Length: 162
Ligand code: PNS
Image 1: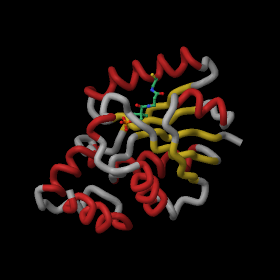
Image 2: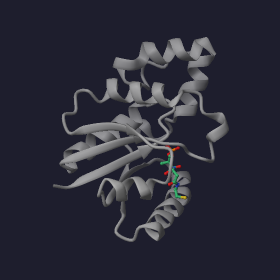
Image 3: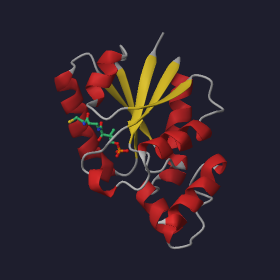
Image 4: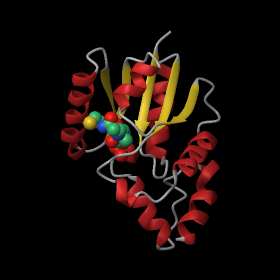
């Protein structure tokens, strides 16, 4: 059975994330979507771990082979603990590449059996990010084209509470 991890901070989940998760769920038998901490963004996370997991569960409920989890340590350690050898990451514009490449090298250094597979994002999601969604939502803009329908209201309510 081929199992992969789709890790991310998912703060919050966007249609870009769901696009990558749906495609990974067709390529692999089982996909673990893991809400983690990006230590470069640690002080600026908006949604709690519980909120991020809840939004992910609601927006992946149509995918039978997807499990949602959370972890606050090293991704490579999570993979080892679950006997997973494949990380799936979405790549947007060229600007993502350097950081993603560095992370894939770090993960392989920690666990040499760990491979990172990059899926190019779809053209519609090329410039979509969680920070863009947060800024738009907090300023009263319409985010419905950018986040999964199942969680759009939850995200709007949460952003307007800030
Ligand atoms: O959605 P993001 O913010 O690009 O996700 C990045 C994330 C959370 C996957 C990455 O920062 C991560 O793997 N964090 C856990 C700590 C870790 O293992 N870092 C990479 C090796 S130093």
